[in-house]
Amino acid sequence: QVQLVESGGGLVQAGGSLRLSCAASLRTLSTYAMGWFRQAPGKEREFVAAISRSGSSTYYTDSVKGRFTISRDNAKNTVYLQMNSLTPEDTAVYYCALDRTTAQAMAFRGPDYWGQGTQVTVSS
Image 1: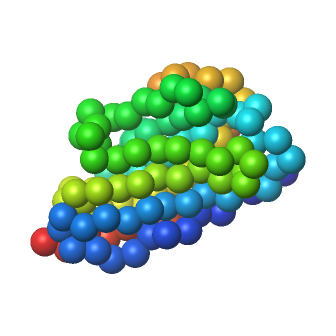
Image 2: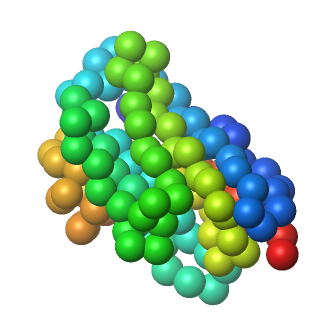
């Protein structure tokens, strides 16, 4: 059973930054695509960012391009989401995601596994 544990969420003012982390209970993270999704109150869960198994390819939803950066450290079984220039529209529960296929496929149809989520709140 795969477990994904997010951390790093919290309350930040608009324009601020946060870094989310996701630790995976796996022996070999490098065999999986990883990503982040988010769900704002009253809205559907949406794709935010994804990273390929090696980390050589990354994908972002348009609204976060240039502000968010996804990265991974396979030796630490951890994936990160650096979030800069945050706005109130970024307020949501952020979910770590893991998929056995590709980052692009996960971005389109959702992942095989979800984390429990971490709250990010951006005040104006």
